[in-house]
Length: 130
Image (cartoon, rainbow, N blue to C red; front, side, top):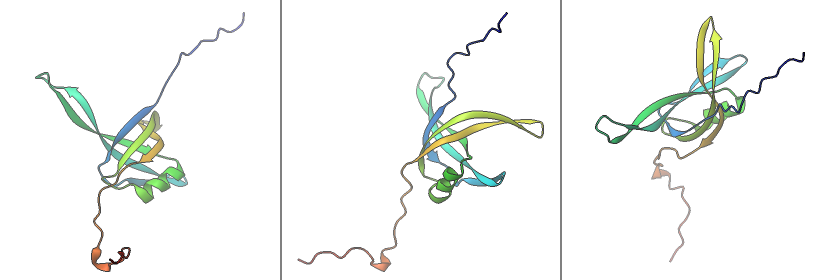
């Protein structure tokens, strides 16, 4: 009798976050390279006890494992930067302890905090004379 194959249905393991980085990323060794951990603050609408909708902030830790993405994070991501991140959920075991987290698959850079420029150098473009 042939082995019965089971259809596993449609499955999706994808999360999308749009938020603001609340602290500078943390870089940790990961095998022969490094990984980055980004704490992204997002807002979730929730119904309060009085029936009003309120926005609750949630800090979402996101792991960045891909070397190219880690390089981008190192160069461009600081506290206050807005990001759009696509990730998937993963679980694993370290020293018999279960671990889990969100692994970034795509990072799109948004606006960054305003940093005033020092005007003392007068290095701006020359203005036309009238």
